[in-house]
Amino acid sequence: MNPLPRRLYALAAIVLAAVIFVGLNIALDASVTTARLDLTENGRFTLSPGTIHIIQSLKEPVTLKFYYSKQAAADYAQTRAYASRVRDLLGEYAALSHGKIVLEEIDPQPYTPAEDQATADGVTGVPTDSGDTVYFGLVGANRIDGKEAIPYFSPEREGLLEYDLTSLVYRLSTAKKPKIAVLSTLPLDTGPGGAQAMMQGRSRPFAIYQELAQTYDTQMLDPGFTSIPEGTDVLMIVQPGNLNDAQNYAIDQFVLKGGHVLAFVDPMSELAQSMSGQDPSMSPPAFSSLPRLFQAWGIGFNVGKVIGDLGLAQRVQLSQAGGPVSYPIWLRLSRDQFSDNDPITANLQIVNLASAGALMKRKDATTHFESLMGSSNQAALLDVEQVRLNPNPEDLLTVIQPTGQQYIIAARITGPAKTAFPDGPPASVGGKQVKSAKNIGVVVMADTDIFDDRFWVRVENMFGKQVAAPFANNDAFVVNAVENLMGSSDLISLRTRATNDRPFTVVRDLQANAEKQFQQQEDALKARLTDTQQKLRDLQQGQGGTGATLTPQQQQTIERFKHDLTETRAELRDVQHNLRKDIDALGALLAFVNIALVPLLVAAFAVGLAWLRRRRRARAVHL
Image (cartoon, rainbow, N blue to C red; front, side, top):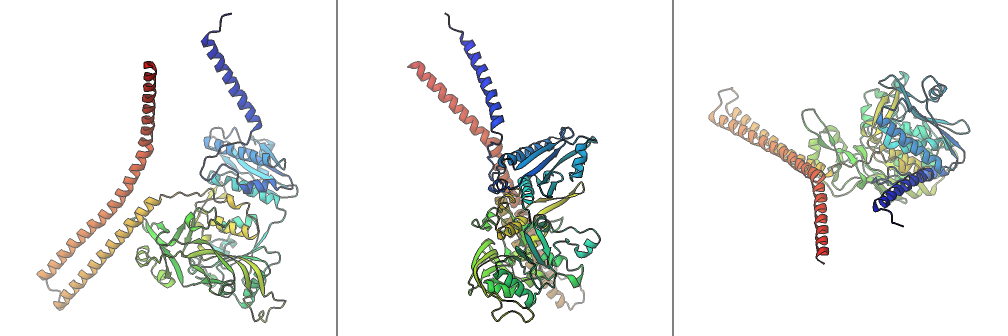
């Protein structure tokens, strides 16, 4: 029998390979639905351990209804891609839950009961250019009466998708919300407009408070409180006023009895100052502290000093005419400034603060003092009055003389502590006093501007709904601290994924160095100007103040000044040009590496490989 032709063998091999490929894909699609390879730096597309633990800890079934208008969204590629990601993620949740998460996908076609159901469940319909309505939201419900909704999956929060989904499941799985009592002179619950805005129906709580109120049972304490509400898990203190003895004692006993405190104090709260003109009688204090309690807890804090940091200064635009400058009391903290060993800060990327103070451990402290967040080693402490009277960034840059010390901005205090009232409770307070505790739980930050929305989030109105798109992790620090003090850390790893900021640090250093040089030359110009003006005044006084014609000496002095002025301006232009030249050269180098160098290396490798193969063939022929 004659053997089959070689071409037929090749054709049969190709057909067999195609059959195996298709069969393998079908088998994998049916059996391995959640497998994926995530090569992103921070594992953005891999479920976090917190999500997995929350899902696998579900005790009661949770029903998730995913509303998505397939036909209406067919012409919008971005929405389709996002919907596919949401669907895949929800599928992973259901697969991991072992039947505890029941997933339903509903396509609300126009004028159908499904559309009526979507509207009744609180899902927002978004009109398109063609007049159709796209529903793209999620509604969750538990077996009791709990109901949570994401009205519309806004693309601005795509980076927070896992957090939004997991927190929704977490809220549905928690029968009773943990309780937070909030003591603050700032209108966290009503927003910058305060009570007046609330009465007029235009209040908008600060975004961090909104996030806390969504997950926890939050209660704002009355300014005249004398006790901490029963059942409080965490007491959050933000910019406290002058507390009387009874109020200090209530907090003291709450901590010694096992309650946890998250405190925010400030040597110069810019958030409080921005509200001082609304109602002078209700204005928050410009500075805040808890001196009596801090002493008992072993915390040192100077309300007269703020941190100025050349290494962490935020870039601000002072005017439309000039370029951005470094503002050394507005700090942009990155990963190097956070503790890697504490779950509150381990995953933080960026936190923006303003006029923060410095904490330290007292020499007589019995507690353990652990730094959570600090300055760079290019920092110094500035007098509050000096900064308040002259907040000009250019002047502050010249005043700061770095000490090489890294000042602590936030700290965790644990361990044994004694009461702040060793002589007994105030006369107006009854009950048995707890005089000490083996282990207290307190977290303190020397800044309250962390709550200011402008430093960390963009809040936009989308189809009548407020959508928050964070660009820093200010909220993550606060919510992480609350959750950790309550004894849970499942959601901590999810909040920081969307703000993995990767700034051009080399460019930023170039700008800072050139800016420093520019400032020095500008100061020299001012000194020359003052000196010349003094000389002119002296010459005019020599004329007796008669307004006589300028002498040749005066004219010569003026000409010399004009010449110096022209030269100095030319030097300043050279500094700015050199700044742009260094940055442009770096950009050109990166562009060459990305656009030309890599293809050239690949081409060179291919040519070298081809030459090597040809040489091997030539040797084989000769042999």
